[in-house]
Amino acid sequence: MKIDVNQLAEHLAHTPFQVQGVYRYARNPGVPHADYTDSFPGFVFPLSGKIQFQFNDTPYVFSPGKVVHGGAKMKLAQKMFDKTDWEYILVLYRICDNELEKSSLSHQHFELLTGQSPRLTELIMRLWHVYNQRGGLSMFQTEMLFRDVLNEALLCVDNRQNSCNSHTLFERVCHYIQENYDQSLTITSLAELNNVNRNRLSYVFRRHAGMGPAEYVLKYRINMAQKMLLTSDAPVQQIAYTVGIEDPFYFSRVFKKQLGCSPTEYRERFINNPC
Image (cartoon, rainbow, N blue to C red; front, top):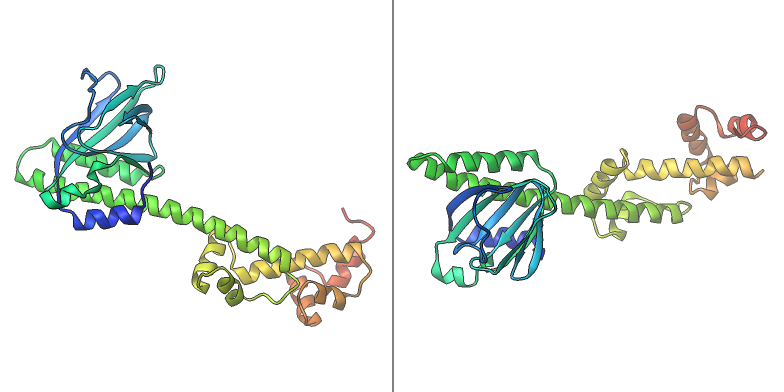
């Protein structure tokens, strides 16, 4: 199952835990397949290939771009994919507070869709190397690194979700602009209509269109005016008004800035030769 990243982050922030082991597994590691998970819960960080495990009959495919969590002593089943090679790192941990452990998310199985993250891979490899050293400093670094790993994984999930949400917002606002370009449209009105602030809306448009929402509206209006100039004999002033620009002088100025010629020159140049 999937889990809310903010819920997991809050849980990790309030729950004391300690690393119990960091293990690296690969295809044919020489270890017999177990029927149950370890006596401690753990996070699986796939490095390459894919292999499927079932936690209490719920299947999860271990493959790069995700992190999988399994609870302690869960029924375990394995499925290989032909001769596909695979490799992953398992980090087992222990909840240090008995009372918190009873209501902990450590009893659940879930996956986090992180996407490909070179930094996350780098951190998990450093964790594995540090854990396999000896001494108190290694133990301390292991605890710190594991938290860095979890932090990076949560940030990756959050960034992916925000990216998806921002693309949905971008498409919704674009559709509204294209349906209502002849109306009065401002950044403030578009932001309020979609329950976001102006800065968020501007960020989304610059991310997905390379320009702010006001510039996008203006460019769309000019594009629609181009079509009207070639498909109708309406006066330039009327076309300006039709596409939502009430000042014909402003319309002519921005039209020339975008296309290199005035609306009248554009019509005369292309009306008989649209190609």
